[in-house]
Length: 440
Image 1: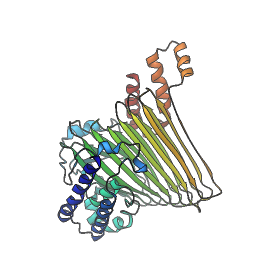
Image 2: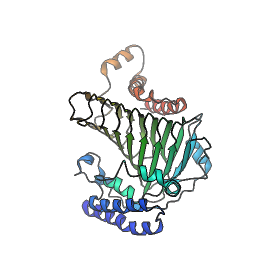
Image 3: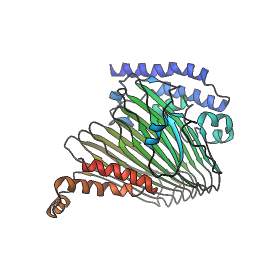
Image 4: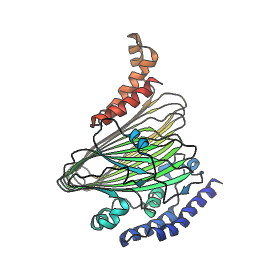
């Protein structure tokens, strides 16, 4: 029965494509061609099941029993007061708003800073065809993932961000993604972020959802290009409601001597899948990956990362931590891939988890696949309960059990929080997490 339901869902989306392609045919022939290829891949792949090795622990079968409607022209109206309430107090940033994946000119800032271009992805197809054809679909093709192929087939809404060569952004770019669908809806957006050579920028991707009785599934794909000697710091904050499901895929391409630093904080969300794939394509490229996830109730957070070392003298450092409560589920699958020509690679990966109850679950799988012989690579994983000796020490100093647990959890999470270099954003995340720990 489950299989039949999935086949019907796949067929529904394939059937919807013809109508979409007719209504939203682009003047950019390259875009139309890529969409057509993608729907063929999706028709062959379908949506993932638990039989797919990459989704075996994610309970995707249960999620896809919902009869999602694919809304390729969703309602993007939202009052300014609601939007303003979701911004971080004291953060001076260029504010970009997407409602149900749709770029909102009305709610977004007009950016006058020289060297920075921001517009809807649809506008970019028409206005910046050279850049689009150089980067769009070059870093993700959806060859093996049905969600990614589906996103490419319906690529229309989303944001285009371009930071010109040698530009140093004066302040962060804040992209606020808000989901507010009324029905059981699949929402899709696609983002293209290009940071040219010797440029520097900070990007905050914030995901929130407005409470409702229905389930929304947001399928978001971001392609990120970091040019030669460029630097990009990318913060992703997820704070959805318990009816919100999300597949967030980031495909990052890092050139020689460039740096990409990312920090993914999953505060809340009913069903969350994060795919982060980083290709270190040029010599001496560098990537840092930090992550923190806090599933409670029956929430599920699934983090899949890949760091692909393609060139010599590249370095990567990855640290993901999770605190799992109630009947929550956390999954971590991190892979470091070192190709034959990637000599002098230095890669470190670690995943650490705390289980607060006997009913909480963690599945962790750190991986190394190495084809070069002159490398320094290590990985590790640990899962357990709160340190009993540390608890005893705190209790013996007069700290009650509740506050002792809160202190230990905060100290555990602080390794990740401290890597948020934008002070108001760090304080915002810190306050939410601290309050949650106190209430455990």
